[in-house]
Length: 146
Image (tube, rainbow, N blue to C red):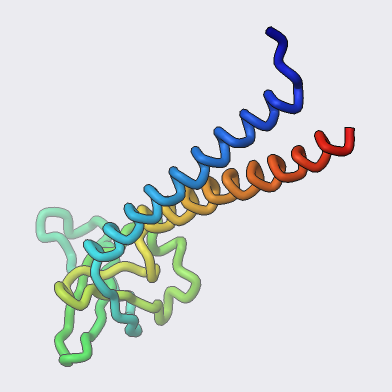
């Protein structure tokens, strides 16, 4: 039994269409669960200051910390790593996002890294599904023309 090239390509495109769209649905559900677990984040302005001097190492660098105020006028702070400081667009007055449920947690970006990774994975798998479904439809018209 011989298999026609158009039929084989059609089968491959069909399989990758289902895989792409199926993975996109699973990743979308994971994104929704991760977003719900992450909670909501409120944007505020922060200030970077030199941290307290370590009594065990008075000659060493004090480090940096970011301080921010919540809507309830509570002041919080946390240490800032060198990598975070270097990634800031405006180190003089950075935008800080703090968790509504736990205002002592803060970050410098609106969404977490895992949310960005899931979003990228969703668009890649959805794109594979779209490209393969379009290619499958084009292959139907090409097979009929031949």
